[in-house]
Every structure is written in C-alpha cells, then in structure tokens.
Image (cartoon, rainbow, N blue to C red; front, side, top):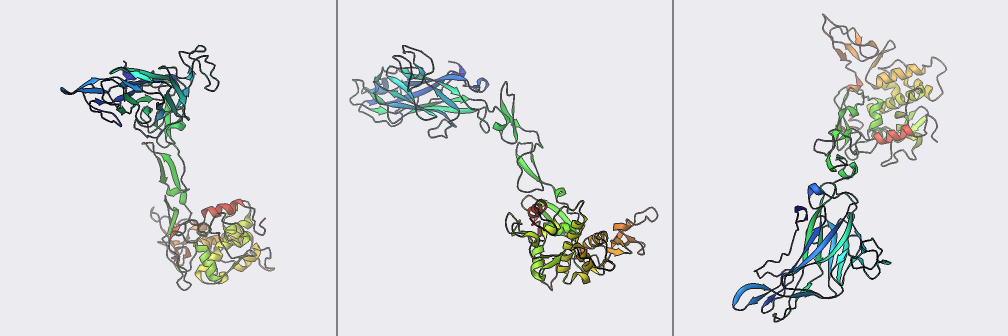
Length: 540
C-alpha cells in the first residue's frame, strides 16, 4: 500500500492479545473486538493534495478481531467468528477538523455523490438520485458494498452505512464494507497546515457480536477509525485572511503573509495607520502627523485608544485658543476621557451672541451629533468650510473669539481691546448684516485681526505680531512682521509678547472653568457640520 493510503486506526485488532475495543462485555472464554479503517483513493499526503472539485473515493473496512481463550493456555487469543447483524449501521463523518470523536465538523469540504452500485442492472457507476435512482435492480448510494449494505446521506456531512442483512466475519477476517464517491468542494485556509483535515467512521453503539459455537455466550464491541486528507489551503487571497495572499494558485496553492505595509482593516481611530506587519498581523500604528491642529501651544499626539490628544504647554493671562481647538473640543465623543470645553464655557457664561445668532449648544451626546440643534450650535460656525466665502470665515473667527472671551471672564469688546484695533462689536454687527453707519471695519480687517487675537497675537499699526526680537526688542516679529534679522550671521529668536493669550493655561479659577487636557471630543460632529445644509443665517 502506498504512503498516501496509510490508515489511521483507532481500534486496532491486535493478534495474541486479549484487548476488547469500546463497550466490551466479556464471556467466560471469548472477547469481542473489532476495528474500522478508512482508505482514500487520493489526497493522503501534503505533496499529493486534492484539487478543488476533484472526485475520489473513500472505502470503509472492518476487521473481526474477536478471540477465544483456551482454558489450558492463558490469553492464547485464537480468533473466532463474529457477525454484524441486520439493523446496525456505521456513521461516516465526511470532514472534520481533527481525528477525534465529536471534533468540529467541516460541512463544506466534501460532497457525497450517490451512484448506481456495481451490482446494478442499469447505469453502473453513474451518478443517481436516491429518490429516483434509475439503477435498475441495484441501489443508489454506495459505489460498491457487501450484500445488503446501503449508503444513505444524512445531512450535508454524514453518510449512514446501513446493514440490511447479517454480515458474517470468519475468524480474524477483514472486509471492505462499502466504498463511496465524494467530491472536494472547498479549500481549507489558515490555520490548517497543508490543508489537512480528517474523515471518520464509527458505529452507533456496539456493532460486532461473537457468534462462534466455541463461545459460551455472545459478547459485543463497537468500532471506529479515521484517516487524514489534504485539500488546497486556498483558492484566492480571501481564503488567507486580510494579511495573507494565496500563492502558486495554479500549481500548489498555499497561504503566505502579505507584504509588510499592506493596508488592512482600519480601526475606529482616524489617526492610526492600519497595515500588515512582517508576521501577517494587522497593526494599527499611531501617527501623530494626523493630529496637527496648527496650534503652537499644543503638543499633538495620536492614541490608539483615544484618537488625537492635544495637551497644552503655554502659559499667560488672557486666555485664547484657535478656532481649530474649539472645533475639536466641543463634543462628547470620547467621554469620559474627553471634556466638552465649549459647552462648559457656554453653560458658565450664558448664551453667546455671534453673527446674529444665539449660541446655546455644541453637540448632542451621541450621533447624529447635530440633529435638531441648528444654528444654536457653535460647531455650525466653527466647522464650516470657509474657502471662497469670506463671511463664513468671519463667523468662524467671531465664534472662537466669543468662546475665548467667555473663558477669560469678560465681554469681548473689553477682552479683545488690548490686542486688536477694530471693535469686536462692530465686526459682530458686520457679520450680522447690520454694520455701523460710521467707520465700519471691512470684513477683511475683522477676519485678519480676530484671527491674530485667537492665535495669541497683537495688532500693531494694522499688522499682526506675536512678539519682539530677542536682541532688539524694538523690532516686532512673527505674523505679518516675519522673522527677526540675523545678528552677526546668527539667527535671532522671536520672543512671544508677555501678554500672549495663547500661552495662558486653559483655566479660569474664578469662573470654575479648569478643564484638564484630554482627547479631541467633537471630530465627528465637526464633520457633520461641514456636510449639512446650515449656513450663517439659515439651516434647512
């Protein structure tokens, strides 16, 4: 017998030994013992694996290993006649993960093909329908079998080998009970090695009975056996997982790891890079570059658990943060680790009047985050795309300034006065469509100067500056003033104004607003605002 047809036998009949298999009942002088073996016509080795849709056969053999003891010779083990009586059956499980009884079945691997048996008077060996077999005098099921034995499908993954008449075994005899035809219908991907799976047969209780005249009484035993098979590991990349590829599809299909860096299923955090590693695992690598909020007073980092996290590192007196900060810290999306700082300010200082709108809210606690809030939400002003629509940019800068004034503890006209040359109230009126009749600032002046304030700068003679030069404090620098001139070919540092509000700690103890640093809390809500139909004065 070739290597590929070697059998795994679980209940072997051992000559010259008194070993009963399964549920054995001993008589005075006889022991019942039997074993089943499974052979396959192909697919028994890794280098001789089956191919998808290949048709082959499984044969089931049973051995009578029952023995009698000679009273004058202890355990001499002479074989005796036994019988499988009509009404018994063997149950074949076509495919399962291991060789053990009760192992997880693989119902998609093999398909039982009923055929007209070799003793049929018509269509011998042809596929048939058990309901209308067209086999003449023969049965539809087994390809071949012992007289009276039939093969009947039982669900998608089992075949009952049924005994319709007694089958007598001579002493020590092995008989091929039945052979069935099957087809490989699926691949077996990871973690199976070389596509290995198992086929198994076992009796339903005791099946072999000693019927030899030498036995003082009848005893019985059950039977079982299995064999391994090898299927292709894969037919396409999908069989190998998201970080695997199916290699050598036309010759020896098997799974290999995808190239390192191959994209894989994204996690819930937008700031991670999702890619396969060298071992074929999907990794979610934190990427701080995705979290840049263009705020010089924050350290921006990505957390695989919390997304973007912005920690403030600046100190000062009047408090201000950019529109980018307020747009990402005005929600509940990372609660309880995050804090809705925008709502905290609004709840503390009261509604904010901005651009003709009364702002009372930021975001809902859950998605859809802006449902039902309309223009009452600060995010409608902070998050809208402003390119090509200057009025939206003014609304955005006014909203951020109003929140900065709120946490600083004063009216915006007073809080912004030391930093800008235009009037906050006048700019707010321009945005609302009701500009002052005399000396009204232009929309551009309002946007530029408020943007300067929100980012910690100061307007000097109409231009934005952020500090003075280290070696020559008479020179302004940053913003519209640019960098400091070199001194003796050495760069000169631009030192922030002492009043830089962007350097102030985000805490007003008098108001009780001292939120700790935490992850962004309104990124998704901000995306909703960018995509909905709300404008500055209308929300359809």
